[in-house]
Amino acid sequence: MPESIDDRFKEKLAQQLRFLVRSCELFDQGDEEEALRLATSLRVIFHDTQRSTSLLTHLGLKDTKMLSSSRGHGNLKDYLAYKIDVTSPHPVIARPLLGNEFVALSIDDWWSDEPVFIHATEKFSRRVIILSAANKDGGAHVDQELEEYYKVLCAGEYASAIRITGDVQYEGDPPFPQGVPISPKNAHLALIRQFSHETMRSADHYRWLKK
Image (cartoon, rainbow, N blue to C red; front, side, top):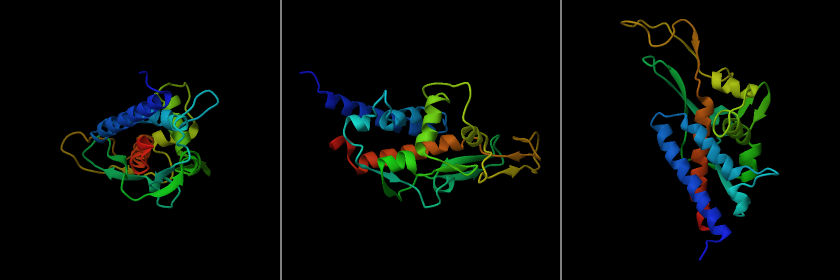
């Protein structure tokens, strides 16, 4: 007996969640470029347009809740920490906070409304960041030009970024340039890993595949 359309959408949602699990494991092992694959799966799960329908909409799940890891700052402090290692060629990197403390939001608020990054007084949502990665930066497509805010994230040029200026004595050549500010270049990737953590925890907590 052929599977129903609803069963197919449930399997496709389960498939995308499996993609998230695998890419998160690879990210945590050091392959941070997997965040671009994460962004593409998140787009499939959440993003609705006039021409495409998200899996959650297909399954009638858009009225469920999402778990946000926001701690009330309304910016990157809610989602990222920083690791400094003066023996590395990349001495300062952003890391997702992950964690087990959440607040419940509607999917629309989580996806489109809650600010997660502020640049030049403009607030950016998960939706904007995920679509920039998926649609423009190689998740599913590469554009000639990236948005200004996204270039700032990639370059570590946002106001709250941790910067170090090397003045360390090494035996041999230093692993990174000395005497110049070094910023994390991976905040966009770490953010997407954090959003994926929220998504997987939400899928489990609200039993998306059991409804």
